[in-house]
Length: 99
Image (tube, rainbow, N blue to C red; front, side, top):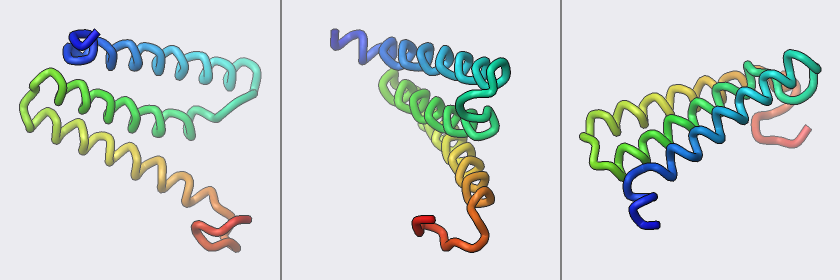
């Protein structure tokens, strides 16, 4: 079992489940009009996937440049997601306050 995690295969499994989740949620939104809009969903999933890939890179001994690049990609996706959420707030409320 330790080899399953050390080799990064556990991360691969989680990434496959995330990809399936993204596909199903996008399909549900486009076909049935239910769930989370892809413009809200995808930045969040991309940030998570980039963090998982960074973890995989660290577990498998990848170089620091790869790790730094993946962490930077996660940060960019997170900031994009945060900016979208910030713009969606009611202009009459203060960030972090309850509506």
